[in-house]
Image (cartoon, rainbow, N blue to C red):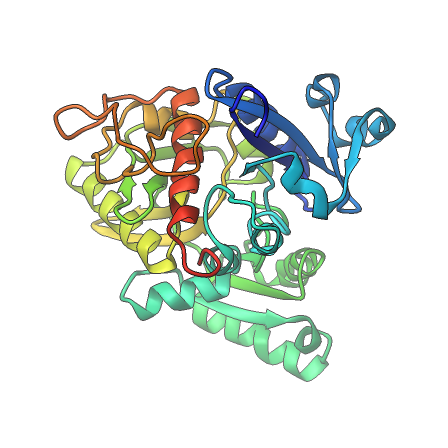
Amino acid sequence: MTDSNKLKIGVIFGGLSAEKEISLATGRYVYSLVDRSKYEAVPLYMARNANIYKIPDKLVIQNKTDDVESRLEEAERIKYDDLHKYVDVMFIALLGKYGEDGVIQGLLEMLNIPYTGAGVLSSSIGMHKRVTKQLLKGHGILVPEDVVLYRTDWQDDDKREKVVQEMITKLGLPFVVKPTREGSSVGVTFCKDESMIKECVDEAFKWDNEILAEKYIKGTEFMCVVIGNNNPAAMTPSEVDFEGDIHTYESKYMPGRAQYHTPPRISSEMVNKIKDTAVNVYKLMGVKGYGRVDGYVVDDKIYIGETHTGTIMVPSSYVFQQVSRSEISADSIKGASMKSGSLKSGANGSVKGGKVQTGLSPRELITTIVNLAIDAHSNKKGSLQ
């Protein structure tokens, strides 16, 4: 604790993954949203060698990780063992590998530092597309058909020929090829015909040793944020409208390449079905705090494409659109309105008539996520799952 008795909220961003630039943008915005009347915000940058630095504000506002990395002599290096001296709760703004896959979560568990979002197991499942799909499929949730490819098999001429035929026979053309453990559409390609298969597979193998070839689903593409611990609630989902065949890295992050509609331009019945499915997925994975479920509506069916235990948070993010247009029941954020300066749960003082006031602001969302983390870690037995 500081002399002001405020909780120290560490916001960690940067990292080792292909999504480090998006993480920088997310961490910068989250850091700006931490309510200084309740908390002390501590900006923490994870460098590409996994060292952690407390950085001054002049580095927080740098445009690229290269700019931050070139000026780390202006920052304070923090040893892992000393992190508890700087933060009481960690807001994880790391994205992709080492940020959403259970690695940083496991480290923080060992250091006994509460953190936002999913625990070790849920993070690992959510980052691994094959495992996620097997879990969901086993519980009757529709997912696109796929073929799993391993690098060692692809390098064997006989096995490669067999797997190519399996892809064509099982999936048809076109299909999508993606790394098993990457986000933000990194390494994802749209395979239109047989002549493109090698190129698409080779691109995915640049990012992982296990990849998926997946049946192409054409429908209304949606993203649905879910918030809560024991009684999670789905926010009003968003539909994404983009040019091209798939939602690429460029269409996700280049201004004007995609438009988001909240709620989706579908029937209210299907919107509610999306929300129910998203909560079901969230519970199956055991996610805490917040997460995101992406998928497709095809006629009256919902297919789940991917799950996320972290998400981009920038001023234009649909995450803030969704929470600004949703009502959250008191049960969903039970424990999320806590007394500043305490690691113990408090009363939900902002709840009126059984519901939170419609429309959480970005700052209120960050506060809610932090307090849900405190609540989850206060009640866990062993590591947060």
